[in-house]
Length: 219
Image (tube, rainbow, N blue to C red; front, side, top):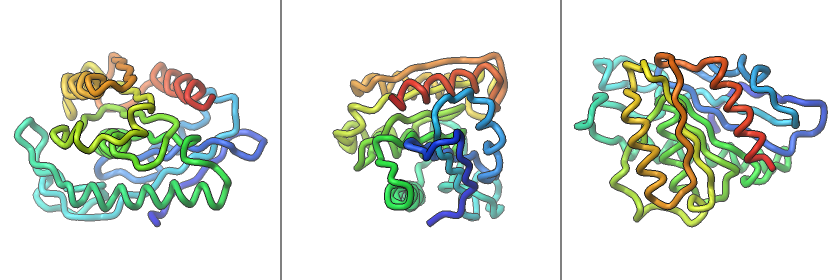
């Protein structure tokens, strides 16, 4: 199972959980400090896994934390399905662990990711073999879109998706995020799209919206 930073909010035993995946080259500590800024009113357990270190083609083969390999960030990029599937298996291990160790069922778990972590969340959410509370992609895109609808799971059809992006993002262009949202919605899935006047990051307003969305799916 992937090592992770874990944090719990609230005084009660958590009935809900969030698995939050960081971006390329970062680690699980990246977003752990923001949980107190989400304004959540219920008890929630957060898991921030650390991606394993691997060579990344995009960065000249430099070894860094990455969920899967990336060769380039444009429309002609190839998709590392093998790396993605290995990561999804490890995320599934965390989902099962939350169930067995804390009694939190998968339908009470939201999958959230930023940038490359968001790509894992979107792709994995569409293929999920178990029901999830919701899937959130931040400043990200959907890789391997050609795999759908053939690979779309029955659970995904009933899972709400939420995508948020900075209008000044020069790393993952906002139009990639919007096209991903439109594609997901075109699969018959409830998907929400939101933009913010920011670059490749998160902002206070977005954190507020993330908290509100989590409250809505944890209902």
